[in-house]
Length: 401
Image (cartoon, rainbow, N blue to C red; front, side):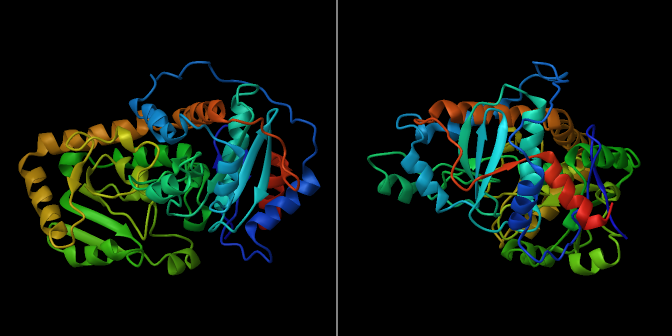
């Protein structure tokens, strides 16, 4: 059965579901763009307010200044951009409100397509407000720019600047909203605006006090040592379920509805082989989040506060299981406090991580990045203009829609 994913408010049906491409997704994207994108700008209408819609500017936006600090003095130069190209997956250039792409390597699954779609929607949402910019994007799970080596190598200049889905204290990658905000069809997850509403609705089916007084985790246990160790945490207080995504996809995803995984008082987040996009989905449940500490940081991570939005669990495999059990016992004996933590976590996700916030974060980050450029962005030789029709054609072909 063919799946469709609706990007809310735009009527765009995406349907890239486990497709066996004869060429890489990037090649397919570029080829489609050559056929369907002209140099003429697409008609755009700005239907959004200049200020935040019903929300103030979240505090985690302040991390933009911190993330761009390595380039405050030397700026982002052509040489630092050239060095970044050797580390990134693709180069994105925005010039006069149009998006161009130059591909360097393959992205996992359909990540490049959904990331490009997000940038096209950003340009549509803020016509005339996105500055000309030239940046490199890394679409893999791990960051790629090592802080120490970068500063050693570029003592006389600026280190490479790469946008990634995550970063760490030891890396210089600039956090950027990941592909899953616009859809993750390989695991049957629709765009975040739709998915967050579904999970929130599912969380209302069972009140926190009436949920099973246990911790729950379901995922791919083969992704990383911590997840394999988590299997040993199975107990009366903790249910750990391994997810076989291959079998699940073949069956049509009958047992992986995230909106139906809000039946327990506690939910566990643990990173995979590296960064994992699953944290926001788990927190949207309103269960008390047991967050196994991760060295990887997403763009919104600064908004997460231990003992307010979640309970922190050590990533030490020698104590992790005991800490999870202790947190469950504490929460069940202090239900009002534990429920409040779950509610605060859910409020953060549903009120400060809306798609309005995601787009405005992208706009502010790109605008601040553009101010650091020490060159005027130009369209690279060999770069291909992208448009919505090119991506729509890919999904149309994939589903015979």
